[in-house]
Structure formats: C-alpha cells, structure tokens
Picture (cartoon, protein in one colour):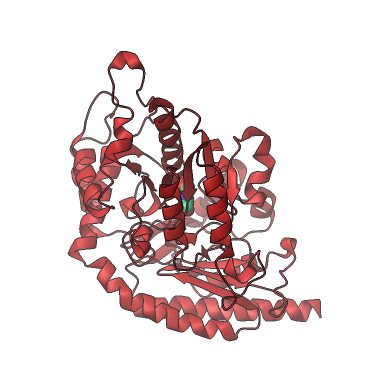
Length: 461
Ligand SMILES: *Cc1c(COP(=O)(O)O)cnc(C)c1O
C-alpha cells in the first residue's frame, strides 16, 4: 500500500496520461495547470485529495441544488440500490421512473403531460427536435421540416444539438456535419447588434425574429430557445417580454416551441422553471442538469397530449418514435430525482431562495465599480460578470490571454471553484447556499477580478 502522497502523485500521473478532459486544451492542462483532484463533498463545499476546502461556486457545472451529501438524496439512492440499480424501459416499466413522472407532471406547465426519459441535456434536446420533426411528418404537414434556432445558442454537444447551436468557437468547425437551421437574433443587450441602448430599445431583435418566424410558417417545425437566459453563450439575459413574444409568434404561425430548460430548470432562475416568468406554455420542454439535484445523469423531454397523439397508431403504420437510450429511466437516477424534487417542497426551496437572490443582486452592484467589469447579468441564481479591457469602448481582452481563466485560478486561492465562459465569470451556486457562504463567494470573486485585472494592466504597461 502506497502512502497518501504517492497515491496522489499516481492519480495525477494517470490523469495526465489517460484522461481527455471536456472543453479543455489538453496541452495547457498537462503542461501548465495545477490539477485539483476532488475526493469528497459536503453541503456547498468540495474537498480535494489534500483536504483543501473549496466553495462549489458553479454547482459542479450547474447541477447541484441542495448541496453535496444531502441526507435525503443519499438515502433515497441507497434504498433504491437495495432493490435494483438498473432495468430497462424498453419493453418494461420500473417503479422510480413512474413515480418521478408523476412529480414532473405536477411541477411543469400544465399542458405538458408526456415524458420521454434520457440521460443528459443534449439527448433531451435531440429528442425534442426529433419529436417535433416526426410529428409534422405524421400529421399531414410533411413540408414543415425546418428548425429555427437562436444566434449564440447552446443546446449540447451531440451533432443534432450542435446543429441548433450558435456559438462559433464551439460549433463552426462542425458545420459540414450539421443540418441547416434558420437563425434568429437573441437579445444581447450589452452588445446590441442593432446598436440600441435600453432607453432607445424597441425590441428590434424581437421584431426581426417575429418577421423571420412568420416567413417560415409553412416550412418550420419548431423553434428552440433557452428561456430567459442563454447559458453557455455567457449568461445572456433576454429583456422582459422577449420569451413571451417568441412564444406568441410560434403559436400564431403553427410552429412548435421547444424550451431548453436544461440550465434554467429546477429553481435556477428563481422560479421552478424559467417559462413561468412569462407564463409560457411550451409544446416541448427539455430538462436535465438540476433534475437529480446534481447527483446522477438523468434527463427528460416533456410534451403535450396533442403531439403524443401524432405518434399514436396501429403498429403497422410505422408511426412509432424509434428512439431510446440504454439507460433511459434508470431507477437509481430517478430515485435521486424524486428525492430532490420532494426536497423543493419540504424545504420550501423556491421561497427561501428569494431573499438570497435579492442579496446577490445587491452585492453584485458593488462589482460595477470595478474598472474592468463591463456588464453584470443575473436571473435568480444564474450570474454572468463580463470582463472587458476597456469599459468605455467595451473592448474585449485578447482571446489567448485568458483573463477569466486567470481569475478563476486566483479564486482557488480564496477557496472558491468557479468556471468561466469566454471572458464572462459565471456564478451559479447551489440553491441551498447560505447568505454567509454567498458573501464568502462574492468577496473572493471580487478580489480575484480586482487583483487579476489590475495585475494585467500593470504587466501590459
Ligand atoms: C448543459 C446544457 C445542455 C447540454 O446538457 P448535457 O447534459 O451537457 O448534454 C443543453 N442545453 C443547455 C441550455 C445547457 O446548459
């Protein structure tokens, strides 16, 4: 048996030798980064192999809700484990997936009554796209084939979800492999493509989007949107009325609305789902990330009776939805999700979140004084702090300088783990975070931004 330090050295060596990390330039990872190996968690904290403690400032990539090692979820999984870990939904049903369906139907918009399970956000989105497409093929309007998606959108990393994506840095290289979509503008108010400011804005983006939507009345099957907040694009928040406007335009033009609540769902924006902010009833909704409280991979695509009935036929008619993933409806993951959803009610999570959201909003105001904070965008517990080289001209930092990466590395010194998007510092703490912990997070991030941006200017002279 090796001693602990040897064991850690060994882990580091194997990681560098064999693991290809997601969204990571491996040359930087292997040659330059100080690699932190997480060993355990507790509440809002992560502990690495050296026992160092870090606040989990982005909820382990936007998934954790009630904290790590949450007793109720731990126990639900253990209880399920004593029965069975996995059985298939292809040709069989299982207890937890049924009990989870009942809960999901209760908490989602009331027109959504059917649930198709999968295991991650990308597949949940693809299922939505395929259902929308096949629905029109089978209900007498086969010319409705196109998908409308937004500039800067992110819906996942599989080829179908990348097709509806709009982030050039991630998606451009795959263009030849993708199906074509119709792109419409999403409001990026800080860098308004129409050159407007909040006082001169007439929602030109919505007008443009509506125009394009109506032009595709005959040939579009669906519009897919990240409601209220585009996440991976850098926390880009749409102004009030935008989501509602898209919803109405979709309805008027007989185009299905798919909302991707993968990031925004399960309380993240201050309501259980972001569509509730503007009373939108989507035809299809994809959920994943927060569904199991951040414990296990499970996802769901919800839809209406009407769409479901588009697939309802005698077997020989070949209207079946021929789609399914091996771990679809996994009992362990479903058990975690049930426990997590029950906690929302038991611990009044959404209600208790409201004062924390207001506190966060107030404290974030202080960041505006920093000379390199260009914009702060917040929807509930989703926050993006956009760093700029020059506040007046909104000049960006040179891409290779990785200013935001420097900030998040500095934040580790203050006991905080966060991960940026471009030059946007993202804060997305677990919903269970306390006011004191929130202050700890904000203070550390404030100092990190201040120090790193000041040092950068000193170096550049
Ligand atoms: C993360 C994310 C996805 C993809 O989910 P995965 O589980 O990573 O496949 C899709 N849509 C949105 C809005 C997301 O934030």
